[in-house]
Amino acid sequence: MAKGKIVILGIGGRGCAALQRLAMAELPDAVTTTIVSADKRALSSTAADCSILLCESQTGGRSTGGNATLATQAVQQVADLLRQAFAGADTVFMVTGLGGGTGSGAATAIAALLAEMQIPGLVFATLPFDFEGKRKSLLAENSIKLFQQHGCAVVLLPNDQLQQALGAKARLEDALDESNRLLLQLLLSLCRMLADTGLINMDFNDFISVISQPGIAVVGCASAQKGDDLPMLLQQQLQNPLLRSKKIESASSVLVHLTAGPDFTLEQFEATGLHLAQALPKASLILQGLSIKADYTDQLELLLLVCGIVVD
Image 1 (cartoon, rainbow, N blue to C red):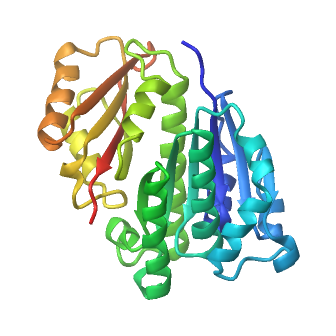
Image 2 (spheres, rainbow, N blue to C red; image 1 turned 60 degrees about the horizontal axis):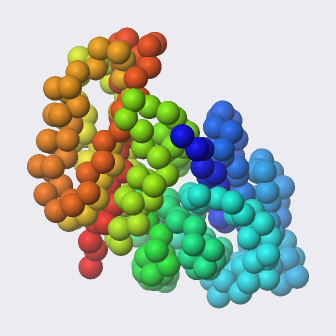
């Protein structure tokens, strides 16, 4: 199977934080990383294959100060550099925080550039805390609409749900680190799935068919002992409070990829598909992939990608 090229793109402060964590992991050969920011200090301290500084003449190498219009315009000025970074890419995974100037302004402008280049994009975006005010909330909502207009699937990670997932007494540093850890796990699982040659392959065409559905997306990954209830593991991911969508049952497409040992059974494979069909009754496209690894004698891994969730 021909290997595709994946670009992981970090945008703004949230993107820098995610790529700093990603730099500690071993990535498949087909993956390259790019960071885009107006903050020169954050950019210089983040390891990436390509770094692009925005609007230095206007901000002096500091942040955009929440000015999304400035960040949008700055993307036009570095469009040629971005085209070079994306050249030959089969897909781009964007990581950003919505509600701020660079995160919302630059990310949506880059989504438009990807549409122009006909490169499918999958966006991982954190949403601002409620206490950060209506202005940031409205900017984030508008950004989500623009992503969808440009054909990007969007995985939302609401900051307010960190408390629900981790408990009210969780330290802020631990909560944000958990968000970064989850992002890293999701990105690595997707990259490895697309780079793997499995018993039942999930290649780029399958992946693109799923993420091309309009709407919001949910991605989840988990590992378990082989004796665990696989449908229960699936349900846990569908209800993950850090990823949960209230309207997930409206999804139009779903991809699930399993990595298991040689004794994985047809019954387990069928149970996975049946559970998804019941949990997501409107999904017209359900794809299942399977990789068998000899050293997975006592474990299995699951990657779930649900797309086309309808939002108001």
